[in-house]
Length: 284
Length: 284
Image (tube, rainbow over all chains, first blue to last red; front, side, top):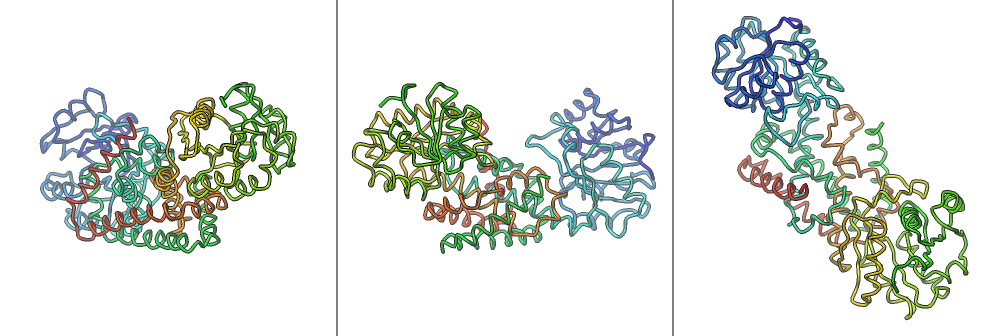
């Protein structure tokens, strides 16, 4: 199947990311419908021309006419939804998702899916500190990474189609990683940083420090404003990879603590020179 | 002594911060001279009207005519400079500084200073990732905190004069803390965050991750580009306070690690709710 404007696209879960997908695809001339449990989300999206039509029900005609279904649900809800409703899917439909962790969900979905269907997973690394379709904005994809997460079971055409979604939505960088490597990377660049930000805010009574926080502290804790239900689920689902990254960080941090304790200024400087050089690569 | 435009102000150390002080004071109509070991820094500052005049020498006439001397040197250089040259200072002159750590330096300077002189310490919490008077810009003070760090030995008039410098330079918030409380605060909001940023960059080979880093990782590591000579000295001089803050953070981080390891989602959520609420205070 190729991504073209004759396809019927269905978004399941019309929150910030689902809504931003719908907005971007609809703007680009695609036919987009949506299913969400929240009546007001569907109403808002139709009124603001983010989708053509939608439903709060398991709407058989919407589901069975969809050529491409994008799941933007919590992982455990996604899995249940597939189990309960895949008998309604159109023959040969392609399924994709926006889930932030992969190993724990991709293989399970692929193993239970009807033989004529194909699930090609993707991770749009974009977000905001606000939620809901009312905050949907496809501009959040402009500077962001889009990662296609194929397994050995995926077909070339589905992988290309999935990349096409990222291109249509205007992501800055599109790449591809298998599930395990994806989870290792995301454990480090996203989940570990969120753990650090949380602990910086919880380790010390900080209310009285508001007046003194400069840019450094604000930068390191911006992501400490966090949706606890979503992130605790994502952490649990990527538990092993995240624990490994946390251990790696703790070992390094403890090593730096020992350098300071022993007043080893030379070794501390070496670390700073290394961190400066590595960080400079990110600013190119 | 009151801060007024008849005073002769001398800046010792014309780097980024000394240069930005000179620029801001000179713009506001103050007479500003400077001493720096670097010929090109003095030349640049005179040509760009950042200072009225300057010298690379221990210029007796400049020093002995200064009513207010601002030291913007590395801490150990600052102390040596006072020891070697205070016999040249004008009777009754007031001395201030911009040093990032306080307990280790303020009492020592005060104890060796001639009886007719007064040292009132200050910490402008501003900076950039670039150095030198060529990058001086008094706009860096606009959103920043200025902390006056008086000891029991300071006079009301010197404290007020020191606050006046912060007001003239246009700092957003001016406050006052004694040395020990200052160092505890700075150990947490500035030094601990720099340690974390460094360790995030050094704990894992990250060169291949450039393509995947989203805003979170970039935010948490921006300050990992660091002047290793200055920061290793600041860490060493605030060693006890910083080690304590690192321990506090490690304990919390390790506790979060255990929650994840034990799959205690409820307690993780509690931490996230707390971090969200505390961080929200910073955005008011």
